[in-house]
Each structure stands twice: as structure tokens, then as C-alpha cells.
Image 1 (cartoon, rainbow, N blue to C red):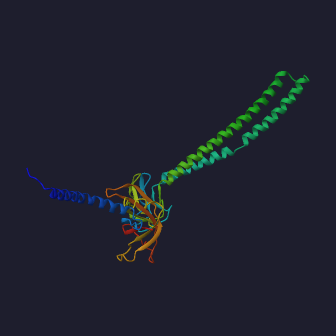
Image 2: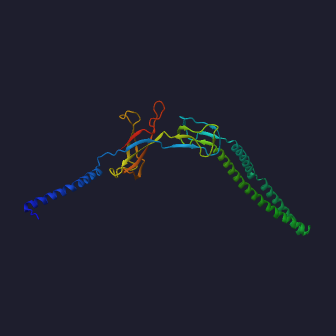
Image 3: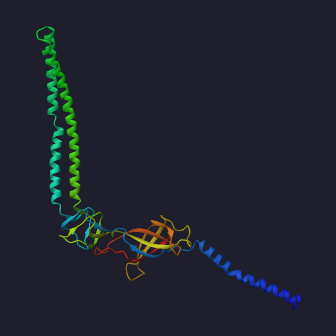
Amino acid sequence: MFFTPPNKRNVLLAAIAVIATWSTMPDRVFAQSYSTQLQSPGQRVVADNCSVKYIRNVNIPAEVEGKLIELNVEEGMNISEGDVLAVVDDTAAKLALELKRAEEKQAMLEADNNVNLEDARNSRELADAEAESHKKLYDEQAIPFWEMKKKVLEAVRAALRIDLAEMQKKIASAQYIAKRSEREIAQYEQQRRQVFAPFDGYVETRIAQRGEWVQPGSPIATLVQLDRVRVEGVVDALAFSGRVRAGLPVTVRVFASSDRERPVVVQGKLGFVSSELNLRRQVRIWIDIDNVKDENGAWIVKPGMQAEILFE
């Protein structure tokens, strides 16, 4: 057993205390520096890994089966909303539409026909007059009872003919509505054989060929929107907690050329902030910006270009 003098024992205890203090110091320093980083209001928020993307990039499909008899698009064309891009063989649909139009016209004429109703009203008026006349003759005993009764029943029958004519007119009106709906269905079927542009855009790819047999859903062409594009990136959700939210004013810098010192600068408001963090504790954000054309008519900002999103 060794004996430690009192002075040396005090020195040893002091050394152990110093070592214990050093072992806990890095954790406190890291926590303090990280807390300072989170609460630093002067640090500017800049989104990472930003790039330009399409807002709309759509394969325009055929809606019906048939042979493609018209194809009005080529790659590189600018298309307006509502333009007819292609037509699937619509011969049968056009004939069916003409038939339904004729049937609708016939039903409309029958619904507007008041001849039967007016004739029934006139017949009732005559029958009522004859019935009153025969009643007087019967009262004067100039005619037998059965002849007077016959005229009274004919007046009742004439009243029923008015009800029948009114009912037939209502039926004709209902039939007209049905024929009109059939004509609208035939018109819709004929329109489905025309492929329309759903928005103003640029034909990126022509997929189908004229004379090709297409099925419902077969893509005709790829249409993209270039007058308005989306700049998307990610932001550290923890380092800038509470400082990134939709609606904040931001500055977008798009590097449209090899000279990164001369970017395209656009001001706007942040459109979206994701509620989900990725594995690097980042949230996805984006902003939609208006695109412009150069002096040659080409769009300046193109999907795939690198960009930056800077918060004010």
C-alpha cells in the first residue's frame, strides 16, 4: 500500500477537475455556436441547387380511336390555346351529327306546333254552342232527350281534346329537349376527334405521324409552356427557421449565359414552401416567373438553367 502525501493528493484532485472541465467544453461550445447560427438575423437566406423547370410539360393525347387524317403541328411551332393540333377520322361523327340536327329540327317544329291545340279549342267552342242550343230545343220539347244528350257529351269530348292537345304539346317539348341533348352528344363526339391545344405553348416534340392509327391516350405532341417558368430550389429548414415562408419577396437570378456576372434578375414573391424535410434537413421551394423573348424572338430563360433565389 502506497501513501500519498497531502500536498500531492490536492494537486491530483485539481488536475482531475481540470480534465473533466475540458471534456465537456466542446459540447457547450458547439451548442452555443449552433444556437447563435439559428438566431442570427443578419445572415441572408439563399436557396441552394436552384434550377429552372417547366410549369406545364404535357403530352397532348388523342381521345378516340381512329386514323390520324390531319396533323397541324411541327416541332418548334408556337401554339395558341384552342388551336386544332390534329384530327382523327371524323366522317361517321359528322354524318351522325347532321342526322341529330335534322331530328332536333323536326322535334322543335312539333314542339312549336299549336295547330292541334287551336283546333281543339275551336271545336270545344262549337260543341258548347251546339249543346246549349240543343238544351233549349229539348226544353221546348222540339227534340228528343238522346239528341240533346249527344250534343252535351260531344261538348265534354271537345274539352278533353283540349287537354289531349296540351299534353301532346308538352310531350313534343320534352322530345325536343331529348333531341337537342342527342345533338349535343353527337357534336361532342365529333369534337373529340379534334385534338385541341389546352394552353399557349411551344411544340417541344411531335410524336404522331399523319395516317397513323391512334388509340385513346396515344400522345400526339409534347407541348410546353415557356411564357412562364418555375425556379425551384432547397433551403436549410433549421438554419433559417421561421424566415422562409410562402409570400415573402425574393430576388431570382437566372444564369442565362456563361457569364455568371450578368444573370437575368427577376423580383417576385415565393409561391411554395414544402412541409417535408429531405435527408439534409432542407425544404423544397419554388417561385413562378414571367419569361421574356430576346430580339430574335427566342425565350431567354429556358428550363434546365441554373439559378439562385435570394430572400430580401
